[in-house]
Length: 143
Image (cartoon, rainbow, N blue to C red; front, side, top):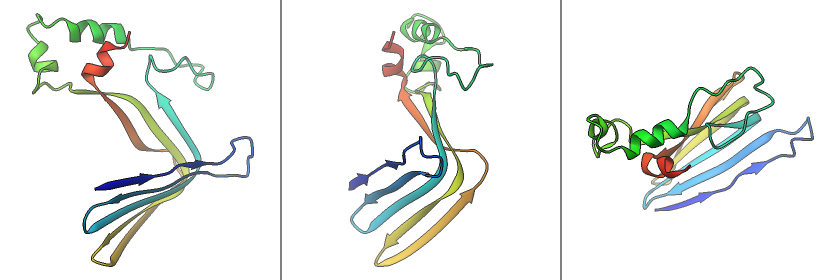
């Protein structure tokens, strides 16, 4: 399997330009999956502590503390630790960011045995197109 990815983002100072995320191609022995996207607005919202308070979100208050999660993760004597953080626990990963887009479209093309299947979807409303996650072990170690 190979993975080819590229990202092109237009100059945000130019109001007439679009933000463009272009072509992610995954190749297996017989199947190629290509994703092409074009959006006018594209932003990533990071969870604390990976960013500072945003001036665009003036009414936003921080409601989460990584210190509390780190303390819980590192306290393996707690009776709930195994059910929460253990190998079969419900908190294996944490979301660290979401990618939000608006006014555009994406297309997915699947090529198999020299036949292409293409499906496109467009949206004018803000949409979450990606969620960035981190393994709890890595996240809890950041102080």
